[in-house]
Amino acid sequence: MAEWHSFAKLRMHTMSTLNYLEALTKEFGRLMRQFRDLICSKFETVELPNEVRARAHKRQHEQSKAPLRRKKPAASSESSSQNVRKTLNLAIPKFHALGDYVRTIRMFGCTDSYSTQLVW
Image (cartoon, rainbow, N blue to C red):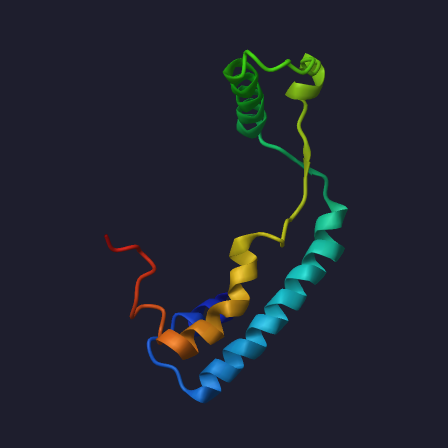
């Protein structure tokens, strides 16, 4: 990841650095899937206590927000206070966007030469 990051943040690219970054991106994706399948599957990870509280708070807020709708039966306090099993999720925008770096650099230049912030 450190090597990928250093190449992605270069301030000046050549065709060879972009080609290498493209190869690194594919290798990084393969290694992350391998890590998820071989390593993460060996560990049982659960939500943090603040995630459990946030989920319970959100459920309470949603139930109190719609008084006219027929309320669903409340889940037992036991199930709402238990930690939900968590796994490494590679299907999130942050991981998915890594594959677009080389194409974006080729189109717009180095990542420090522009901003994605909206201008009003």
